[in-house]
Length: 188
Image 1 (cartoon, rainbow, N blue to C red):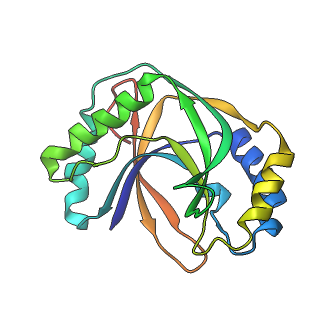
Image 2 (cartoon, helix red, strand yellow):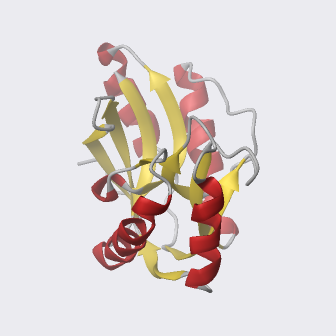
């Protein structure tokens, strides 16, 4: 099973991204746009994991200490690694240090379960599109600049989730395996 840990985004933010993606889709036909329904803030990509280990991962995540809700603002767009050779079009995720603290807590909780620690710093974002080639990216950049300051809304995170990702020709499909509330309740 291909697994990851993430925070969902609210419908109003999802709709704002859907409108933007619809308006940009024709400017770069080589972009592979993600499904709006699957947008999320990844806290930890776990990767391929035997199904018999899922219960241990759920238990590890359920033991993350209680925390306060996390305020998140979604704004701006950019490219990884850069605009000249983009692999990903991303939307910005702004939050206080609590979000990075949660990501670190997820890392620490999963380490004893044998999940390797991330070697990159946590960089919260939403992936909107992926590129195999940079054809059409110039037109996409112009369309983004014309759109002006991009604000997509905000959210207050009160839970996170363990997801399974199944890669399909039309894009990844996600199945929620467990939900972990910040209030300290066991997973559901």
